[in-house]
Every structure is written in C-alpha cells, then in structure tokens.
Image (tube, rainbow, N blue to C red):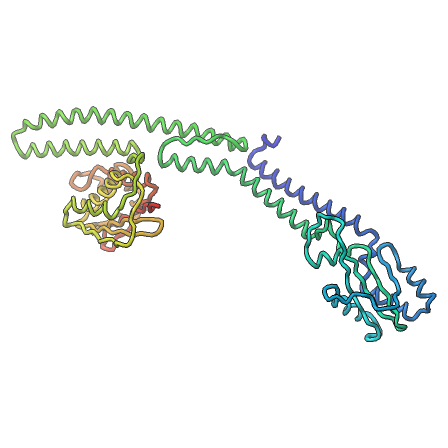
Length: 451
C-alpha cells in the first residue's frame, strides 16, 4: 500500500507514523508509571508529614506511640523506633538538604537532631542504565531519622522508588530519547524519499554540460518515478537530435570545403593580384565560418582527454607567437600555481577568441592572472567602447553581434564568444563581462584549479 502513495502522501505517512510512535511510547510509559506508584505513599512522605508525626509522637506516651506507628505504617512507608543513633554517617549517603527541610517544619527547632540518608542497594534488574546519584537516590530507600525528647530515635523509611522510573531510566529522559530517535528516523526516511530527486538533478546537470544521456533508474514515489522516466526519454531524444545535427553539419562542411578547395584552384588563375587577394580572403573567411559553425554544433571542444595545464605558460606561449605590441601580459607570480585540468587545444582557442575579440574592437588589450585555492581567473581588459550591461548576456549567443549591419570590417561571424562560452562550460568554468578600468570591456574566465 505504501508503494501506491505519492511523494506528498509518503511524507505525510512518515510524519504521522512518527507522531503515532511517540504518542504510543508516551502512553506505555504512563501506564508503567501508574503501575509503579500504587497508592502513592512513597510520594506523600514529605518533610511536612514527617515533622507532624514527630511532633505527635514526641508528645505521646509509649502506648500511644505504638498506635501512631501502626496508623502510619504501610507497605510503602515504615516508621520504627531505635534506641541509638542510626548508622548513616557516610558523607556520600547523607542528604543535608533533606535534613534542613525537615528541621524547618519542626516547631521546636534545635530540640531535635535530624538525619536523612539513603542506603544504596544492589539493583535486581541488570539492564538498568546508570544515571548517577540522582537515579540511585530515586531507587534507594530514603531514611529520615529524628531524635526524640527521651533520647530515642524515630526512623521513616520508604519502600518504593521516590522518583518513578521505567527500566531504571527517568521517564522524562526516556520520552525525550524516544522522540529524538523517532525524529531522526523520520528525517532519514524523508531523505531516502528525496534521494531519487537528487540523483535526477545530478543527471540533468551532467547532461547539460556533456550532452551525453545520464539515465537514472526510476524509483521512489509514482510521480517521481514517472518524472525520472520522462527525463530519461527526453535526454535520449535530445542526444539523438544533437548527434543528427552534428552529422548533418559535418556532411555539409565536408561538401562545402570541397567546393572551397575547387574555388581556390580556380582563384589561382586570377591575374589581378588585388582580385586574387580578395578572393582568397573570402575563401578563408568561408572556411573559418564553417569550422566555427561545426564547433558550435558539436557543443564545444571534445573533453575526452584532460591534462594538467599551466595557464601562465599557455598564455605566455601565445603572446610569443602573436608578437603583438597591442597586447600586454602581466607577469604572473612565480610562487603561485595556475594549473587547471582541461584540453590544451580547446583552452588555447578559448583565449585566442577572447583576445581576438578585444583587439577587433579596441586598440589595446591587457591580460592578467588571479588565483585562489579553488579557482584560476584570467582577466582580459581592453580600451574599446565596451559592452552595454543589457547586451552582456546576449553576446554569448551564436551569430549575435552588437553591430546590426554585420559588416565584416566591424566584427567577425558572431561565433567567437559563443565558442568561448561553450569551451568554458565544458571545463566546469564560467565567463562573465564587466566594465574595464580603462573604459572598455573586461572578460573574466574562471576555471577550477587542478588538484
């Protein structure tokens, strides 16, 4: 029947079951306590009652004293006379607080000597839990001895537990412990019911990055299992669409490059150098556009191979290859590790795209590195016109350009930042745009530091 309940129904059932267990345990403990307390004589032997009996006995003759004892004695409280001082001088057995309270109820203060002590005895129940002196006092016979005017002593002794206990455990503690255990069990059960949802969330997060289906076994509440089945089917369909698109674009790219190669051969026959340069430049741009489009279709760079890469060395080598005076590279600290785990070719393309974009719209670019124990951040500042705050999210969309005229003289194909975003995401990193101190745009690439 529990398997037919929905997610909300299961949570309600867990909470109701926990509440029922606590109420049932409380009722059982109350029942056991009622059986223990009996007529309550052990509870009614209070200092005031003991003081009243002492006053009465001290004024009575010998025969009347015996009658008084017979009247107050029961199965739970026993009073006896002794001719000598009771043995209760051991320090850890004396109860000075009880002695003081009894003496306050006596009308003739100072006339009577009061002794209150307990005599611990062996516990017949071996599984009782020891809670120290308080529990020993609750189970041991309590004795109150008071001297009389004629030198004799009257001793009151309890025959029941002063404080009720269940299996030797104080009831308040037992109820609290049961409540805590039931609460923990309820939390564990709720966490168990929510575990399929956590697995589903992890599967979706991984699929969003890799586009590789991460099926999870449907289980849990009926609606949760149905949701997991639907997500598994959706991932398979999306992966099939992405694969089909990649195959289609790859075929188109192959065919187009065949025609581009033919056009290059025909361009060799152009006698005019200026027209030849224009033709070859257009063919290069077409080839680059096809490569970028294919990269976007594949969802970024392949992450099948990862290695530890020093970003400081990678960017330094790029600066040497470029040899461009418009780029300045802040020398990183030699005492800090700038290593990340990733694909070297993909990361090189990521930063090349960002640097090319900065140089295309600005006169100068400055590159710097920052590092924390968890992240390595590459900052690229330029002195160009910058990117408006309202456009900073849209520029990472494929084929989006701030220049609506889409002139080749003012920008590229609109795929550079989109490719950079995909590569960064595939490396579990992030990229954001801000305003540069030099008035242009600042792009920050944050990547997880290698372990």
